Image 1 (cartoon, rainbow over the protein chains, first blue to last red):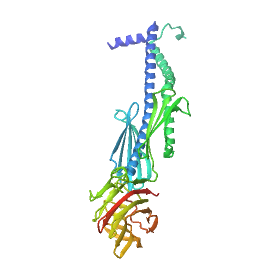
Image 2 (image 1 turned 135 degrees about the horizontal axis):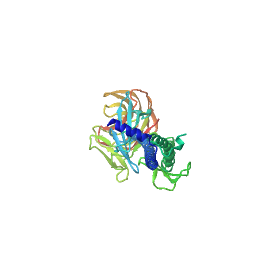
Image 3 (image 1 turned 90 degrees about the horizontal axis):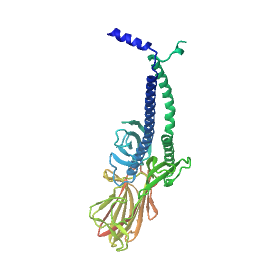
Image 4 (image 1 turned 90 degrees about the vertical axis):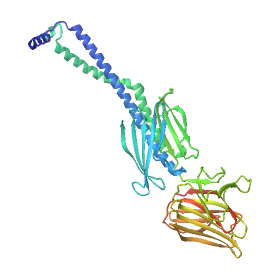
Length: 155
Length: 316
């Protein structure tokens, strides 16, 4: 049985007669398939990268807005701000969320550490999160340290 | 030379041909995909860059210069329109800002960024009680004993609302202001009393209303037979114990039945106290560098005290 198939295979490989039509059809099919697939994948991935660029910037500015909102509440609000302080932002096609938490007398007495996160788009299976860590003086609210604590990541 | 004479291809040649053509196709497809990016994605990337640039410009601007710009062609690239939408809160120290970018002449947003801006200039808050109550804005007051403090028009039906306390036993009230370090406290007061009386007013600053530590200025004014004078003393209160820091004594001066102003300035370790614009004393102490305010009144006989224009202003 094995010999039979080997013979057949060798015969098929050695045969040089009249494959033209089948070759052309196969080649055209393969070319069309690969071209279409490559174009689609490229286009979709680039569109996604473009969207994530936007999400990243929006999330960063929401996190910044959270820090400013908390400092404003510390300084001007008659009541103590909630911990965490949460606010939602409605963009045209999606929404974002800011979540700000704080620790008094941390890392040292007289300082407040603020952790502010921006999520865009919020409540989506895929979203960007950016987090800022800011340390302010607990009496004057002067900013002593401002850094992006975690790089953005995609859930 | 045998290859040239062939009338067809064998199976291996076909496979090799397919692989070569596939590689060529993939290479060309990259070029196609770049050209397909241009209409939308490339525009969006540019718009994002411009929007970020505008937001950073606002970050470096004075608070007062952050204002709305209605939709207009973007001056750096006329392929885009942009707008800046600013809404400010009632106390005019916080702005919500949207920056939107559009393809020129289109209404669908390419990019929108949101942020907030706050005014961190010196704080100045005044409670003139003209809203007829002792609650926010600007502060919620905590009177003690409750029910003894009230907002009234003085003189009656004048439209001028004051914070009144009328009880021989002492009573105090304080706002829910969290406090500051370097600031001035200015208060107008009017003691309505018959001449035979002694009244004590106390004004607290850099004061912790929970632990009762901080500074206090006591105004004692009396008109009792041969005792006609006013004494203003400055104290430090540490865990209920008062320590004298300075003060002044005014012979033959009584503060009844007329408006007066007391001002306390806390500047680093110095405490400047003024009565009607004149300096009383300016002692130094460095124990407390932060706190809120409180007012207090008590009297020997029946009296009424009216407080008004209670203002704090940060000095640094």
